[in-house]
Length: 222
Length: 399
Ligand SMILES: Nc1ncnc2c1ncn2[C@@H]1O[C@H](COP(=O)(O)OP(=O)(O)OP(=O)(O)O)[C@@H](O)[C@H]1O
Ligand SMILES: [Mg+2]
Image (cartoon, rainbow over the protein chains, first blue to last red):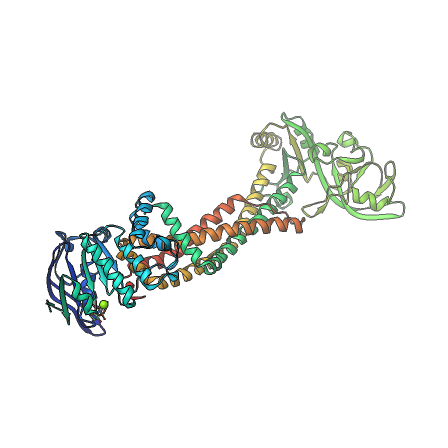
């Protein structure tokens, strides 16, 4: 379960302070499917980064699965992120010199998982995402949709409890975009908490719950 | 993260940037190659010089007049010094552990044979030169073991002297005039070459007492002793010192063992080798700057990747390790290339310039490789730290 209480986050740009998140309080039960929408610059990515433990709020309390993030050290947050969170980015963030299989394997390698376990897990994920015949291909040899599927497989490698997707279809055509959304929803159906930032009302409409952000504030529903 | 995965990660990164990696490695490789070649030449010269010194036999002790801390200063500079006499030499011959004694006086005189004449070095010595200096006659024999004071007028020629005075024929039995005296040639020495600037082949050996008379000297310039094989130089030198002190009533002479000479010489040449090795080390430094530069660029280019690694749960320390390892691998592999290059070059120098002695020093080669790794570590620290300290959110936005 994700629980935010009075989260504030501002950035100093030049001499001015930009208030990216204002007094955000939010509760997302495990297994939920939430779409986060809103205009550009409204703080959606910042919210996702705070939830993903990549960014620290200036004020407020954040609990992830009952653990207070404020009480964690830098290493503790890295470990929690590794074990509980999967990120999917608009620009895929695949490593171009690694093959699809190696990209998917990366989180397991970083975690020091045994090679035998890794191999099995990667094969399973590639098959699940219909990428088995692309395992040895490098990102530049893959289509956009295939790249995002590799990125999703990578996000799932550590079997996270929460999947955070920041505009996962933003760089994809309609068909691949729908495919990716369906895959993410499939994961949600298996119990993963899914948070998707999107500009696409069609995708927003499919989520169980919609959060609208405007200027760092949350408007529920809409 | 597992060690094999770490290495594999670095390997893939270096392979992906093949050209860049190779050029960076080249910087280190040139440095290592320079160290290997220069120390190989230094080490070779060192061995060559030491061999030059030992070619006149081992187990040698030299006694010179005058008390000096270092050798080279003549006793003539010191007053109230009792010179070394033939009696000193004779008495040393009876000392236990001493196999043979050669008293030495050296001077210049013109040597004539028929119409030929040549001015050169005259060495007044005893009969034991072949044993003490490991020099043997190629023709005839060396000076006979006459008593020092009643020596017959025999002479032995150096090989060059023989060729100059008696071109194309044997000088054995012929007469030569040295100064105002006539000598009969009884032997010709084998070719020996230069020894510290003295051409040992352009020399005439005559009995010590006759040389002393010829050069109007009362005393010896040096006494060379051969001690029994199996004894160590220190105690023998002590015994010689004590014996001469008893005779002279004080230590007004200097005893130098060959071991001491070799040690001092070895030290000097060793410092020289280190110095030229250091010269090669400077180019290693330049290679290190190359790694620093390329790693700084690499980290900047891979900001997005750093952000991703952090998003995947990598700790700061892990990011640091990964980039440090990249730098160390670059340097280490550059070092190995340099070792190969240096060894190849050293062998080539050995083949192309046989006169220049070359001897690859594995000690310096290993040192150079270790230094290369340290250079890699040192030049990797700043870029790797920079990578580890990147804000993951900012880093992710970089791409
Ligand atoms: N690291 C940062 N430094 C300075 N300002 C930042 C930083 N990150 C976010 N901001 C600012 O905070 C505000 C919210 O940014 P955020 O990226 O969360 O918006 P967003 O809703 O994701 O927008 P978009 O839909 O364009 O991705 C913006 O005004 C942005 O300029
Ligand atoms: Mg955004």
